[in-house]
Image 1 (tube, rainbow, N blue to C red):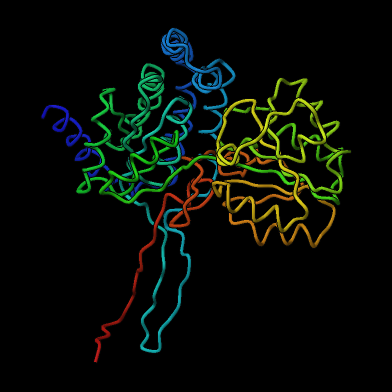
Image 2: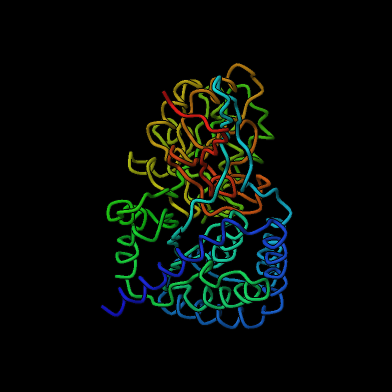
Length: 418
């Protein structure tokens, strides 16, 4: 009962704050965001001290290296978090934007206007930078937010939360606009998911088990940040030097994130030539290759890829490789085995590029670029709450516009319906 009472009070506070949040001026929001950025930097020592507790505990539990990488903060990462808040402050405010306006024959003026969603609950796992990103985006888009981070990052999240919450009071913003669940009880998620009276939208960001749990249990609409089984297809008409650079970056630059390449598809016509150098590059970087029958025929010592491998988000230095006959087979494979997150084709053939762009059913589809660019900051959005693999109501990086809905404002001069 105490847990439910505590979380219900957070929900009520957030709901109350949301009424005033939608009316905040762009100037006030931007001033608050810039002060949040300064406060983050001013509290770097305290945040790193809190983060060290989490990292030590994770190491003691022998959690995987990619998990530790996502969890660990340093001066550079905190500076990047602060920079992200400052960038969000510079972006156009979506609230109040007139999406469309038209006049009816009876004289009514109808305006379709962008407005905040209201109260957003964000349930996430090990990455502490998500805390400041979510707060920044919700403040700028006029939404109240309830954050529930993973238990492994509890100290880090609370440290970040405390530092960015300070400027709210200075700018007379309702304290309930930014909230963090301070208990690591697992039941807290289930209680939050039942607070439909106060929460308008839930966004889970983390592993597959978390996403499924939230989607199945929630009584509130959910936008899912689902797994990233991202593929790069190297076409027969590819610039092979470019292909090597892009594929290496997509897999190796940061393998433990959702936009890293998990599957590499290669056209049969250039398979031997391309894979000879590409596999050598990957082996130097300690990438484990799991290949199809043709890949294994061409290269000895490659582990056999299973059907399950092509459906797996490894988040590690493991890569599935498949040789395909053309762009059509590549797109069929991606649509069948991928997670509709981010996929890329490397080609100099315009028609093949167009076929790939049109036929691959993913949130982000690239030509001649790494999938690692699927990110709110890289897209010029400042940051993102997550990468939505849903189709309604948001898809791809969820940033300011995606944190709004709309309403119709109708202006009349005494018209009545007959």
